[in-house]
Each structure stands twice: as C-alpha cells, then as structure tokens.
Amino acid sequence: MYIGQAAQLSGTTVKSIRHYEAIGLLPEAPRQGRYRLYDAQSIEQLMFIKCAQQLGFKLKELQQVFATHQGQAFPWDRAQAALTQKRRELQRQIDDLQQLQGRLEIFETRLQQAREECPLDSL
Image (cartoon, rainbow, N blue to C red):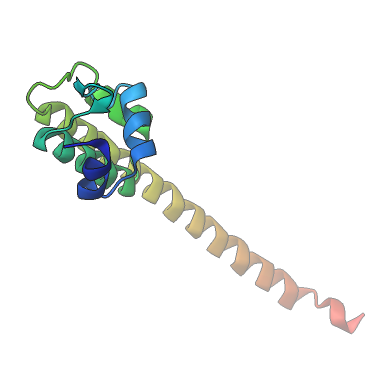
C-alpha cells in the first residue's frame, strides 16, 4: 500500500512516517517507481510507535528499541525492556512528587502556625 493509506490505517500522518524513516524508527520502505510501498508489518510498527508516544515514550527511546530492527521480526524483548524502564522512571517521578507534596503540606502547616502565633493583622 502507498504511504497515504499506511498513514490512514495506522492513525498517523504521512509527514510522521517520513520522519520515522529518516530517524531510523521505521525501515525505509521499498519503492515502486516514485512511490513507497508499506506492508502490514509497517502498519503494526507505526501503530506501536503512536501508542508508545501516547504513553510517554520519546522518539529517542523508541530509536533504541528499533536500533537494529530493519524489517526483521518485531523486537519484543527490547520493547519489553523499554517498557520496564519507563515504568521505573514513572515510579521514581511519582515518589518524587509524593515527597514534594509532603514537604508542601509541612510548609503549609508551619505557615499557618506562624500566622496564628504572630497575627500581623493585630499590629
């Protein structure tokens, strides 16, 4: 199928497909004359890329998943490793935010105590 149909079926854009090829996320499609031809495996890979981006993966991270993938079998092991790493990073961010929230609550409590001990309104 041509690039327009591949874009439509995968839910992405022609511009994105060309970009993914340029940065090595998607193997360059074989050509028939001037036209690129895409197969079902390309569509699946495009859908994976789009889904991964929606889940917070950056294109650089996905490049590592597809680093040696040139139209061969999908790199499930590397995709799973990237997913595991992303979950760890997300958990670290959650932990950091929870700590920050706790510190803000302590600060708010202390601020309220100081306000009660030394009301500036009465001066």
